[in-house]
Amino acid sequence: MEKTKVYILDLRAMDGDIELKIVDKEVWDWVNNPETGQGNLPDDNDASWTDQLAPQQVQDYQKEECGDDDYEGITVSSGSMENDRALLAGPIKIDGKRLGVCFDRKELRDACQRYNLEIIDEYNGFIY
Image (cartoon, rainbow, N blue to C red; front, side):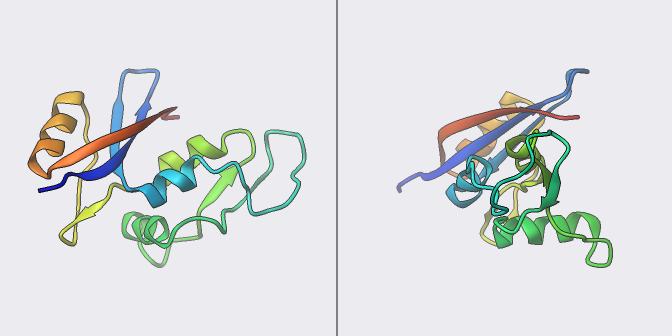
């Protein structure tokens, strides 16, 4: 059986907290996409906007996390767009069930073995 190709979003906080998210190519491409969907933005790092390029699965994940009534869209900022996207992305679904966030490398390895996943690449970012 061929392994499913996945990507890892490795997010770490200053206090040592770790979140490892297993994502698919669509989410990976969005996180790493330099396009803003907003045209030219101001040079300051404080410009923020609702990311119209967010895949539907990211929007659905955020609705699950905060509830439909509180969902206000995917907001990112020019100073940390890729990292914001990685923070907002949810883990993939396998057989209709969303994988949880892994909190260490052993948990990540176990999930990859259990679901026959092959890691293609990793993004390293920050939890803040």
